Length: 498
Image (cartoon, rainbow, N blue to C red; front, side, top):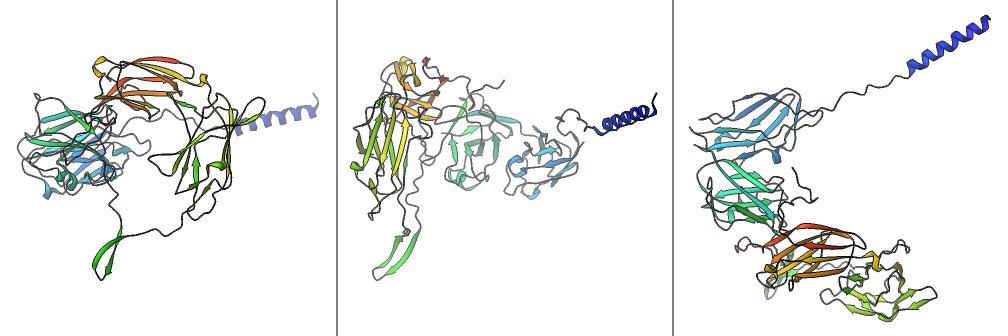
């Protein structure tokens, strides 16, 4: 064999070997670790009597971290000074202000999801450490459920709080509760290890995590009378959460001004000039796509023009045109000022289906109070056709056929219908494709809407009866819906957990 060929052959073989060695890939690794940390030892031991520990040490089988301890780790009865929970390597230390511990009391420390392994974040959950400062353990329970008052469906977040029955409602806004329990994913709660006592019970879904009802917008609930731990005879505890209507109009910053007649308060005025602008509820991104909903149920829809301040309007400089196959035709319309909102104006006409319209707001159509013109604008849009809508026929039980009951319908969480019930059958037309939910308001005061509660007036929110069915309406569809009271649906994504 030619020596040149033999040399070439060995060089080629050497190249292939080197190339193969170069294609080294990283190991794929094994399955993801899903096993939570394991508690190896704890000191003092769990469930000890006649003790007032000032420190608890927990040892685990792997490196851990502690996160959100202030929120996750709760001791009941609560203490005025929070626990200090730290994690180093494989050890968790809990420091307890033991001088605050009461005699003959059972304490439970719920660690929530605060303890996790270092690398994968698997939580060490459902662990509760107990000890008693007396010779026995309190073992009574208290259970119930929580619903959102405005919707009637289970409320699955926040804390249920217990105060001694001798306390007043002002304790709820000034001091922490004695006992707290988390609400689970089904809207239920359970207190364990309670003494035989009478309690006042509340719910608090707060914004600042201090367990005190002290911020506007915090969600609350209260029970009309006290409850007893371990009582299985009385009616089930149902708490309905709501947000109070708080009048903030009087909470204005004021300056104290001296004059010869004495002292008086003068509200601060914002002297900065506001530039007049406006918003029009039209989608003009693509005129081939039908975007303007010409009907709402059985009523013509409006074009809305909303100004940010007082505006002087010249209707003659507002023009609306319809474009048909042959020409562009000027369209007559009505222009009205909203009766409740002085800076909101409506344009209404007899809309044509699947038609391109042009709205022109010519220079001078609106001026601010100083006479300065706002910027002109032009909007081109297309209206819906009949095939874009769906229909729902609602069948209501005869027991609700009374003005005492108000039917409320939401489309993707926006209220689109709210009227007293006057018949057992309701035919809804010209509905946009969406997910529709149904509920009935027990309208005790006859004002045609749901009313919230008031803590200090001891006024509960009006009762809402949720429907069990959600209708997923599509364009061109007609659905029949028989109203049945909610039985199992609970979560926002409308899936039942097994």
